[in-house]
Amino acid sequence: MPRFFLWSLIAIVAVAPLPLGSNRPLAWSLLSLEVGVLLMLWSIHHLWTGQALPVSVKRIRAPLVLFGLACSWVLIQLIPNVPFGLAHPAWQELNTFFGSDVPERITIDPDHTMMFLLRWFVYAGVFWLALQLGRDRAAAKIALGAFVSVAAAYALYGLVALFALGDTLLLYDKWASRGAATSTFVNRNSYATFAGLGVIAATALIMKSRPRHNVPGIFSRERLYDLLSRGFTVSAFGYLSFFLAATVLLLTGSRAGALSTFAAFFVLVWGLSRGVRAKARPNIVGFAIFLTVVVGIVSFSGGFLGDRLARGGDVLRAENFPQALSAIEDHAFVGSGLGSFPQIFPLYRDSGALRDRHIAKLHNTYLESALELGLPAAICLALAIGLLTQQCWRGMSTRSRDGHLPAMGLAASILVGLHAFVDFSLQIPAVVVAYMFLMGIAVAQSFSSRRL
Image (cartoon, rainbow, N blue to C red; front, side):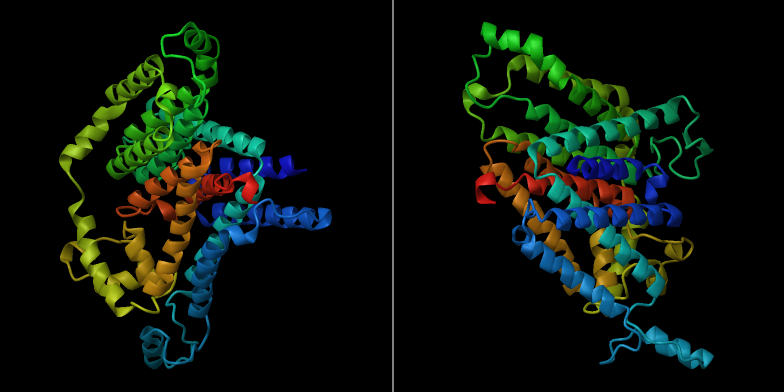
């Protein structure tokens, strides 16, 4: 029965990117229904069998409390006629102008606030299921391999759609990001984050098979025999998936996505190599093969990205940040309501260039969260993710086996965390579902079995 829940969760993660990254009402509603039903069935099964949780709640107590505080504040933002003068002044102006009696709330967009809060619950559900199901070593191995396969499949489709299907999006003409690989996503930057997660997962899969102890000499017959008889076959799938994901990542042309992935990749390789004994370090032949693959990827598909790097950044995007800081100053403690950025930001656009554009996303998740939630709740949410990342760091540093999984979680957090400074990938459901899936597995395998 646990394998049923595992494969069901994998299926949800695999399907999530298909309908435009699940960033449409019908798509994310179906995603919410799927996760909710699976979570309910898992809970019923768990209560029926009476087994202890594979990962106890106390192991994630601090992140859980912080996330609960952030969710509680969003619920307070939704309270009609909230007391103590916390309601947004826009409601009073609306009632005065129209002579109406609409309930006043902290959020200026209750519908979007409720919708995004439900998304939070979906993401938390994916993390919880991955955390509990991924505690089993065999299940974690299956989950990692499955995600690498999913990322590689979407990367392959992205390449086919770009070169063989006339640069289309699910057989429709693209209305955004033309000339760039986007797979089933609308925005190239959002897909770059997903592809980057595929690169990180594939790298972890490759390094998992690297021996750490009692390794023969680099030029010994035992090492050569092991490389020829087992090394290539074990790592071939990982190398192929890495090649596909890295190639399509460069072809997205996402500057921040590529740089964030490179930083995460560097941390992952460094983290898994720093504790290895000198005689157990990767052999020269294997390293040369990997370096050749990377150089080939950059040579084949790096030209488009290089041209975009040479052109520099988006000036108009940078002009949004000072306006956002002004808005945050006015909503520093209570926020304007989760998901209310598109409604509140036009009030602060004092530039002619900005007035002519509809800005639905700030391209900085941290500033947007601070505006919508207020600084205290936004800090709680960031700290919750930060503590989970810290646990991955501990697991990478202390675990004698399966250290590649917490290292993967650390690298995934670095990737999405850095990219969130200049884009909104963490507001795309399929990207967050993939990230939460990987983090759940990583955190589950960051604890020693002797300490549970």
